[in-house]
Image (cartoon, rainbow, N blue to C red; front, top):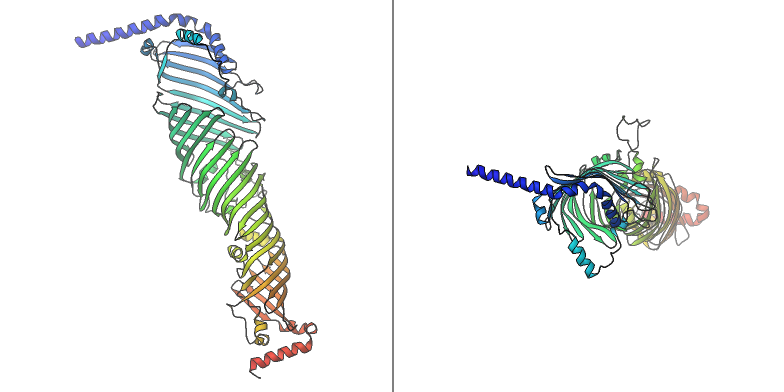
Length: 628
């Protein structure tokens, strides 16, 4: 009986509270729509934009709440007639009992059909900048402040149980870059909002940019707001197979919003993500695009985006350093160390189909492979360390321009094996086949190291000075060797030629009789080397070669086939006595063969002098037979 009495008393008390609240609020309910224009005017003065409200209503059951239908916020001058923001419906519910103590406890806030139309004009001005940077209010007199304090209802917001955003759409148009991005199907859920407590954030939506298909994503985080800073930590982001975790700090200052933080990307498979981005292509090397991971720090502001420190891994390639993107003028700057880069392996494989098939009705369009290289890019590139196709370069600086499948690095400078490279590298990646050209000058480059890295003829050593103009096609190093065409000039002030002893004729007369051959481990030390050549379809036609050794002056000509690494040259060894000995050089690296061309020797005897030639040959024969 006592229990039943207690329940009846509680129910009666709640009824009294509800009735009292209804009686207290009833006059306001009757006049709410009548003051709608006054509310809109107040909001207009606060924002500096026209505000309209279609309808306002109040609900009493099951919760006390306010419902707003059709509210809009006007756009900034010069950005068109479309409103900056529109809300189809807003539902705000509060708990009744705290109101009697002038406390506001929001039960929930639901915004349905929020549309934001963000824009940036060609001058770089945004249509939301004035809302963030409102002019400071004029200082009030103490008497006005006291009067306002007496008039203002002393309601204090204690807690909000949550905020829900349904079916939101955010558009962003950039007149400077031609960008047109949208976030659609946006759903945002915030947990309980209370001072000093983290707020659970759950966000999902679909990102659509001008150059890529729709990209669904999910984000979850714990948010803490203090003063003018918002921290999201821990943060989890999911896009297809890519998942990232970390923290983000968003700050508001006099210059606008900025964000910074760090992210960790565990290993993931890039191919599903690329397919989701519309990049449907088959790379030339089937073993690439299997795994990627990374860590990065970042700082964003309206003026620039900095990615540092940055460490990314794609298959076996590692990239560390920093990348900076500035907004005005639009440019990129990179300071990177790149190891084991194989760019040609990631180019699309040659298509064997006669014609592309039409996509099924309703399916996402298949983008051409060249679309990955169609976006225009202008960048300042600085790379502390770059390893590509076996070559190791340091302190690389270049101006990069890429557009419509064409890439050019001009000017391009780098330190290369104790020397310096300066020149231009350009490539046309579409339409296939890929084409390239190089104009380069090399100064004091250690030739043995560069030849070893390129798997050519590591027998040469010394400081190389060279000038090259080459062009070709293909996406592999072997194709580049087979198609290379152009001109070359080279000079080595002091050096050596390992495995090829060109002094053995002057040193050992038996060589003329064919008795002795040059020792494979021997070499030729020279004080001067000059060479010039033309290159046609992978064959180097050496038109002039001059070599000064301690015992002879050597002139020659011949061919070098880059694909097979074979040499076939004829050298004229001029001895101090005036005799010129022709020497044939043939073979591949490590298997070079030398031989005196006797037929050539006698055919040139009119130049050498028949008497001198026979005398030299006779002396060599006596020496070989041991006759004194």
